[in-house]
Image 1: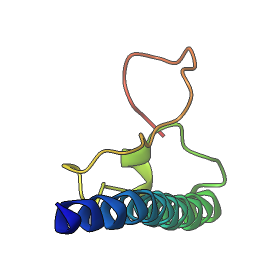
Image 2: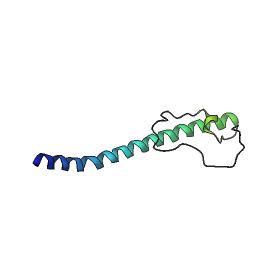
Image 3: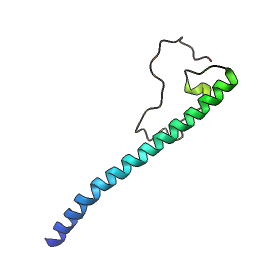
Length: 85
């Protein structure tokens, strides 16, 4: 019974710490993704003298499309049906 109580106490301490760790890791991953997009968009704007509305135009692809804790996209803007520069 004492062992079960000790395991319960350790679990109640460890779970919140693990959740905070996961949150920090996801934030760092999101910041790294935004940094990559920022750099790619700047490179595109230097080459094309304009900014792009589509991630595909700046040659950006998700590195891990399976793990989706956040979305990467531009806001919904009325644009033509085709994706052009």
